[in-house]
Image (cartoon, rainbow, N blue to C red; front, side, top):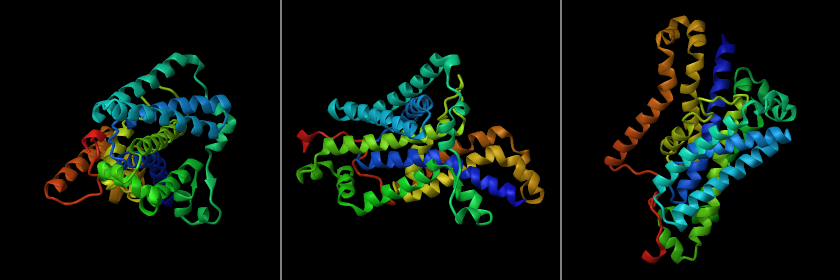
Length: 330
C-alpha cells in the first residue's frame, strides 16, 4: 500500500522538474521586463539538440551544455528582435514557439532510422540514473519519494533556490528587478539595459532548454513523429510563473502541484485499486480528463489571476513586463 503512494509521489517529482526548469527560466526573463511566449519552442530546440549531442558524445554533461547553449541562443534571438528591432514581444515569442517545435520535428524526421537509441548511450544513461542521497534516501516513504532521483532533479531545485537568492539578496539581482520595474529610471542610474537583458534572457532561456532535455531523457529519447516531447509544458510554465507570483521558491511548490495532476493521468487506476473505499471513484473518470487536467488547472489559474487584478490585489509582476524600452522616450 505504501509502495503505491511512494511511487505516486516519486513520479510527481519526476513530472514536476521540467516545469520547474521552464518556470524558473521564464521568471528570470520576465523579471528583466520581457515576456517570452516562446518557452515551448525554446524547450523543444534545447531538448532535441542537447539529446543528439549527448548521444553523439555519450555524455550527460555535453547534453546539458549543448541544451543550455542552443536554448540561450534562441533567447539571444528573442533579444535581437525585441530590443534591437523593437518587434512585438508577444508575436516574437509565438514565432519562436512555432519555429522551435517545427525544428524539433524537422530534425527528428530527417534523422529517421538514424535517430540514436538512448539505451545504447551507456554513459549518458548512467549519468541520468538515480542517485540516492546518503541517510536521507533511507527515510521510510520520504526517502524513495524525494531523495532517490537523478542529478537533474536535484539541480533543478538548486537552481530555483539560487535564482531566488540572486534576485532577492544580491545587488545584481536588484538591478535586474529595477529594469523590470522601471527601465527608464534604471537607465538614468547608469545600468546598461541592453546588456543586462541579453545576459539574463539568454540565461533564463538556457535553463528552459535544460528542462526540455530532461523531458526527452525521461522519455528514453524516443522520437515520435506526431508528438513533441514538450507537449504543452512550455505554456503551463508561463501560467506557473503567475501562480508562483514571480517567485522561484513558490515555483517549487507550484510545479509540484501540477506534477500531482499530471501524475494522476498514469496512477489513477493504481490508486483506485489500492484504496477502493476512498479513491475508487478515480477509476470511473475517463482517462482523457486526466490528460486535460493540467491545462484545465492552467486556465483556472489565469482566470483567478485576472479576478485578483480586477480587485486591485498586488502581485510581484514586473511593472514594465512586455513593454519594449525606447531610450529616446526616457
